[in-house]
Image 1 (cartoon, rainbow, N blue to C red):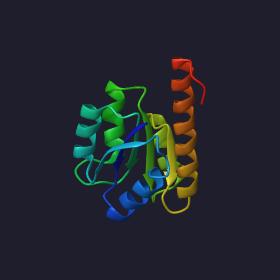
Image 2 (image 1 turned 120 degrees about the horizontal axis):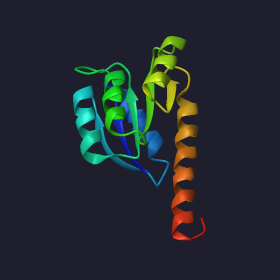
Image 3 (image 1 turned 180 degrees about the horizontal axis):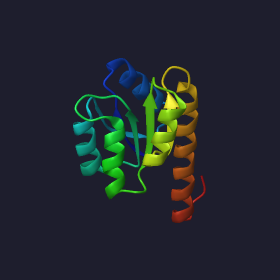
Image 4 (image 1 turned 90 degrees about the vertical axis):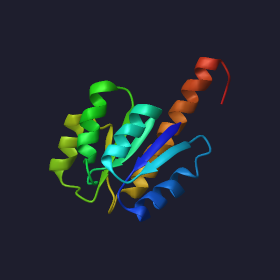
Length: 133
């Protein structure tokens, strides 16, 4: 699974990289700290999954989501935020995010969801190739 990370916090990026590091099937394509770089990388690299912070410089994660959904309906997108109110959860869903997690208290849920996504992709590839896991 090819993944892009985007967050304006270096600490969060390091934590996300460590989390992804436990999955040998994950290829980290890059980590970005602003929305414009993130959108550009998503367009060029076409990851399977993008994990994006809502609040970033130059372009918010919500704006990145809006733009990429105009071009790609299938890329999996997880939004992260310290703003875990129902308003942001609903907005993320309306704009086409696959999942939304609070950075303050749902990081373990994020890791579980990524693990499920990796397993699903591995099983799908094995099924298509006719091999067993």
